[in-house]
Length: 363
Image: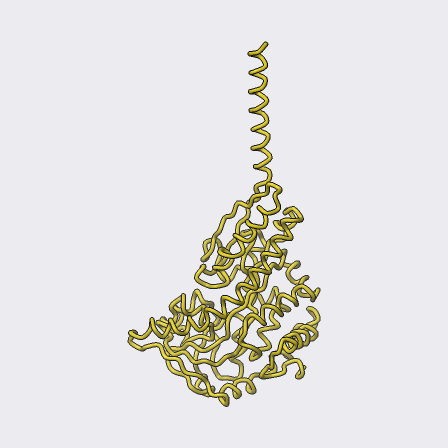
């Protein structure tokens, strides 16, 4: 009898252990997070160093036995810059950075920042406004949903300057130059006489080196880690402005499968990621310029930073066609484009921004 009790007790223990293991396995959530760009880029690096650990911390704090098993695939391991939206949409990745500047056809309303340049150099303000608009403007929410994606947190970049093979000291000197710019950012060259060449941070080095372009309109925090200053040593500070360029987003099917409290955690961690990105960009901007000058000091053509005079910058601002009005006209059938521009400009002004051009007042 005693032997039978011992066997039964042992069997119960085994079954109990098996049940616990099964329960634990059921509570493991497998998620892939990916990007077309490398972690050296601030908005990608923070996906790994801020978003992932923050989600883990909050999930553990729930105390419900959930565990996220992450697969992290950055730097184009799963897809390239031309597939950031479709890769999230189709579930190639559960969570990914979406570069909406290259997605004007599928996300036309998200381009509002691109058609209103020369506002502010502060990415923290741009991010704050972009996050608020994606929460408050139904048309922007629907645009993500239409692409089977859930917006988690806006991404932005520091202010845009010129990085070129040859020095450019005046607006007139842009004429005839081939300038790399991603997607709709090429609009900023309209009426300048420059020729926009489509590209991204992952292609600029080769494009400039091979003569496909003479330089790029880009950002210090992106140019520096990609060492593009080696082939474009002339940095001309124009201060076209910080820009909302996309967001970290989640495949909607993957999102819908998550428990409700995990959904909230993912959204909250997305907001934190976005906030941390703003701080990081401000910290890294000056450091990136300094590093490029120091690292490029011994090049055949040393890195040199100059700055457009206020008069030359003003020529660029005033010579641009009315990008916002053109955009509103071409997108009138796709949603409340005019209201979006007006809301955006007013949101900026409410945060103390004084735009170089009041785009909404020209609509």
